[in-house]
Length: 95
Image (cartoon, rainbow, N blue to C red; front, side, top):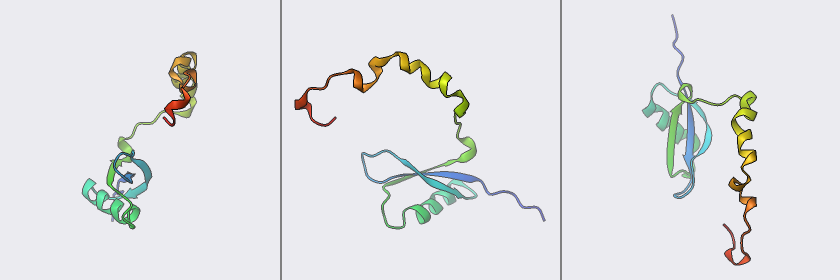
């Protein structure tokens, strides 16, 4: 008897409107619909979710930590991109 592996899915939950989706965890499911249902059952038992995204783990492309310098070092020479470069007036309050 041969068993096929059930795909791994990454689950992202948005708690409220206006917030971004946050990674909640991973689940195994045969298809996208089952992944959504399983994600709802596992990660939003207390009704804390507003929206759920599921993505097949094999479809996610990630950078290698070894490439950190090559990917992120060019931004160090562009200090105007950092929010600390600008003076914010006191009357602005929180940004």
